[in-house]
Image 1 (cartoon, rainbow, N blue to C red):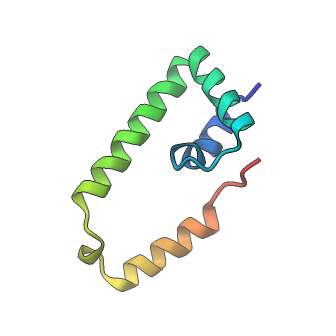
Image 2 (cartoon, one colour):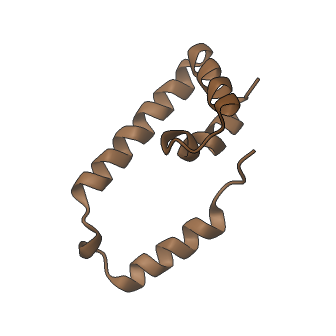
Length: 80
């Protein structure tokens, strides 16, 4: 069974459809029994959509894009 911490670590891959069927099922089973995690997922999903719809790639200076990508790559959680 997946715990809340693992849920957060797998969230990006889940929303991008990149999880194995087994991990996706385990994660959805966890969501069914954990209202705080499903609330977090819904907030994360809404925030992501808001950012995608609000920010245009061209609005971000190249130096900021590079720094942001470096930060994300460096801090990306390991996926099971």
